[in-house]
Amino acid sequence: MELQDKGYPKLQDPKGRKIEHAVILKIITTNICGSDLHIYNGRFEAPQGMQMGHENTGEVVEVGSHVERIKVGDICSVPFNVSCGTCRNCRERHTEVCLNANEELGFCGAYGFNLGGWQGGQAEYMLVPWADFQLLKFPDKDQAIEKIRDLTLLSDILPTGYHGCVVARVGTGSTVYIAGAGPVGRCAAASAQLLGASCIIVGDHNEARRDLVKKAGYEVVDPSSATPVADQIEKLLGTGSRWVDASVDCVGLECHGYGPDGSSENIEEAVINTLMEVTKPAGAMGIPGVYTNLDPGAPTELNKQGFMALGFPAAWVKSPTFTAGQCPVMHYNRDLMMAILWDRMPYLTPLHRSDLAGTGSGGLSNLQ
Image (cartoon, rainbow, N blue to C red; front, side, top):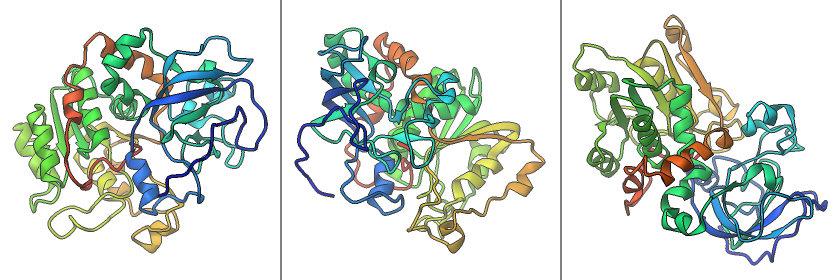
């Protein structure tokens, strides 16, 4: 990692073509995401010199001539997905796979990744294209600054955790298992609470993280224990069942294995296999954790080829449903903003007031 002076950004796309649908933001807050750690650890390929940072909130300081709704002085949240608003996928609210934001791949653009060449916001200023469509403007500047610790989560990790719960069909009375007590896992737990879940169980190898989650009122399991996760869940539920209604992967490809022998070893498929084991028949799994076939540091030859040793044949008979991939942030961010502004998630910020050292195994998702 290097600190560089790249100068004030220009209203142009990654190919150097002038664009007038863009704005320049002066960054107010930007987060370091677990997905950034995948790049930092050499597990997600990125070109040298790429400017990182995809969880950005800032004040508009310059607007292109085609921008009509967003004005200079607006404070806005930037969804980490780059999306045009006009392609078929964007019109169908699948902004995570915009067909115009990544010319090389043909779909899926994101800031600060090797996904379309859009530079990130771990900087003083950043460019945001298609600004009228993409930016979420906060209605009151003073209120936004007062609640900025919570609102900064809207660019990625809160919608990502919420998305994982929604596609896992979390609802009133649901029992939920969340793999990973990092920032996305904690946002998923808060999201499950907002959605009305009954028993919310979070698993992580890191004891300090488990303690933090437990103090927030959620149940915890220890994947590094000699007792299998399913057995720990059965004891917590007290119903004789080893299954939860829904489960969410908030870890991704850098997950550790399970049990004392696997707690220090990266086993890429460990979390997904556990989710398939602990989710009830006809249950659902949300998998927003990052997985990629461009993984030079993968633990096995199979993983390096872009494949995983999934226990899907054994799970097939349970009629499982799972949804994987990036979160379409714009599908959720306005509703979650309103929940924050009207104090419907007062339990959110305390989950992130921690100076815990190290990352453990949880939270390495697209924060995911």
